[in-house]
Image (cartoon, rainbow, N blue to C red; front, side):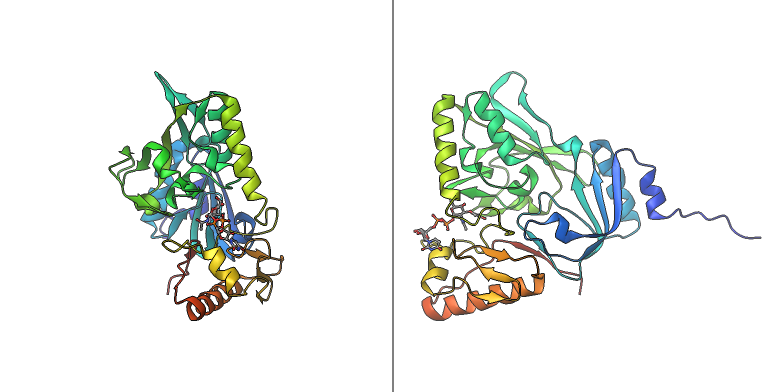
Length: 308
Ligand code: EPU
């Protein structure tokens, strides 16, 4: 007699969870601002917060590799894609609200857009996030890479970050209890659920003025093009953009990827570029800057490699 089938397919098991949308072989180029990356075996949008833990348990029980992806503005997948599940926090992680009883703290979910949080704070006369003006991406992604501009960064503005524990509960990691530095945060490999941001009262006019000045700075950058923002971290006491510019590398091209003429630390995809070309161009830039200045540039963008 045939044994009953005990194992349902992953798709069936996922379908039993609330607020989850799954697509198979989804092109990751559609979910990254640079527009490169092969297919994800599963691309899973998690709208219902309560379904995240059972989903992760399910993936773990079947030894399926998984990772979280926010706005995709600082992450580069390979052209082979991701042979596992890419989890994308959706609707249930987009809340932005005042912390009850604390008029200077804003709490937001991991999928909330950083610009939207800044605007929310401005309307309530709270300053501290103006540097986020023009930064694309979600709060979760911004915290994972400690995004920033003009000497400010998002981790410094946090009161606490809510992360998922292995047993499905969550905990608050207070600022001071986790480490971060320029474009790096210890929480980058944790599942970030949201954060509370500690802000300071100021007039809306003064806040708006600072937002406009940050936005004006953005106009020096190739906004509107397919890019991942700055590709390299600024080395101590220097600027990667200035070093690349001085090495005469603006316009240097590999396939569909070029060093931007507007800002040398940006690379632009003309729509035909690949992840391999980005890596090749980054290596070329790194070598040329090293030869001409002796400085070895370190990538700011995060590469997700296929398992070897
Ligand atoms: N510079 C050049 N040529 C260029 C670009 C810049 O000579 O092509 C010079 C500028 O003239 C300036 C210096 O380099 O003297 C620094 O340039 P900029 O003011 O544009 O700042 P940045 O350090 O290149 C940083 C962040 C940006 C952020 C801007 C604006 C890093 C790696 N980059 O850029 O963040 O938008 O400040 O505040 O920290 C990102 O991280 O993805 C990003 C875009």
